Length: 291
Ligand code: AMP
Image (cartoon, rainbow, N blue to C red; front, side, top):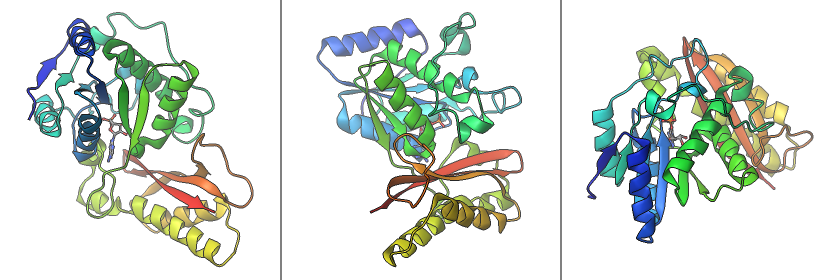
């Protein structure tokens, strides 16, 4: 197990990264908002497998929360998080406070149009600009070779990939598979908000996604056409059958740029869902390849 240090200032983590780069080491970076679970740990393990030195950041970024969202209530547990990060192979946890990251309100923002607009962006119009801005800032501070993001937040991954490409940021973006609970529910820091009945009902996200994929494959195997709205209807019906679930969106889009699919489905596709259980909003997605 590597020695692990918790750093809280930009100057300290920058100096640490610069030192490691001078030694010729590669730096892997895993940005998080903390309350770490095995999904986060899997990203840190991937970074440790591929890079010499690993930084995980823990920062609940106010820029990506709108008024009325769960910024104040977002679960926090730095002691637990440092133990998880250490066990997964991190060398540094960077845990700045808000004043360290934003000593004055930033006048600069990174906006990734189009990829940010639909799906999550429709319900949370300022969210991805907040994400892109903090990720760009963390990349500048840490200077990683590679950064690791979960497919669980598939639109976020697409936004970061596009930002890095558009701005020629010299960071390899690595997408990592979603880690799930035994019943299929995607691990999420927000699962802690669910009561027992909601937790049990929340399996409907994965059930709806797998059902839609199965329908698509079955129809394709019989030579029948299937459209995005067919699969959106399958997911909508599944979610409607769960009384505690309230659908925000169900979508089937092109996997690379999340654009709407018109006509018969083919190629690399992504099915995405957002569902509310009381005041808790959960998202999930699955890939589907049709030839
Ligand atoms: P968060 O702390 O929710 O901002 O997430 C930090 C990173 O962990 C993001 O890249 C997420 O996509 C990733 N992540 C969150 N949940 C999971 C999961 N269940 N499996 C894999 N990665 C995840």
